[in-house]
Length: 133
Length: 243
Image (cartoon, rainbow over all chains, first blue to last red; front, side, top):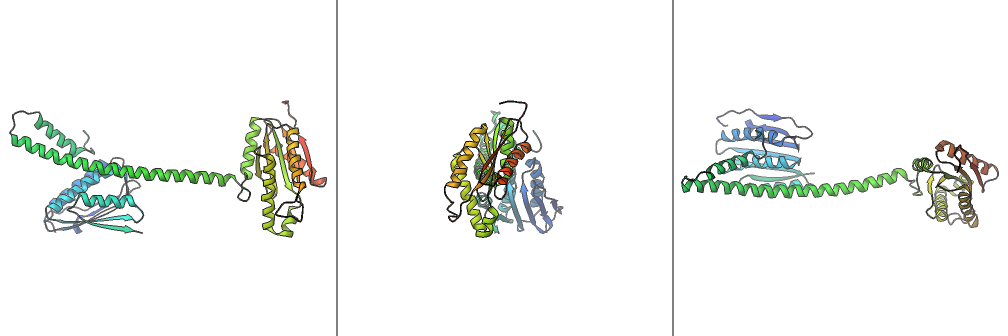
């Protein structure tokens, strides 16, 4: 466990925003649903800053699981997600084990390929592609 | 700048680089460090832009495919909603709409046609034969119409032909051709028996209500039936407006 206790972050999902369930206490961060918020920068900046704070308080040998099951995300969400994964990549560079579980419908090539691109662009993050039927 | 800017990080880098760039007396090391930082972020920005564009291009392509499919389905649904599945001519709702539309635009000759003794055909030869008779009879009618007017199936063995801007004489001539065609030879679906029809023709001036136009043609049809079937009867709806 980390020294700095940070509250879990839970934001209920809506039709246009994903469910955010960041269980910092068990090092399991989950994003699930659709993402086309009215203001993606506002929606994700809190998520990113709390994640940054959480990662900063971790010991270097900690293992963090990130579960992402987004069925749709618009361009501005994509831009913010790059920032989120950049934080995770930086943490991994500092020695933490970050494992990304990337969920997508087996038929959804767009989401599947986006995951593969994340794997290329953020090589420090362990990548697990999970196709759902 | 908004606190929630999509390019908050990029703008911060840009501002820092600008501050350094505006000064002329800093150490080469400082300029170099700033340049290295700028290169790093610029590289990231290019990479992200490339991904974003590929992602949205792909989404756009999928959207276009779905949109085309949606359009196809809408066209197919529109067809299904307005056509009789057996004969592929207008269904009851659609032919009534065509009639109402035509009556609002011009004078119309309206034909209602009923296959004679169709129930007996069904009972004697079965429904598949009955269906084949309907289809073939419709083909014959369409052959005579040769693209003129609109034809629809209003009931089991009852059909309507809307002849917009036709005079009564023109309509009757056309119906006589249909009548003759049916009497000329049996249908291939029922070679052992001649299938005929009774016809009611009404002529309606522009602005006639659908109910009156149809009622009039239907009354003529009833008269044709009453007088022994396999014949044409006609009626004209008079109105204040003369043609």
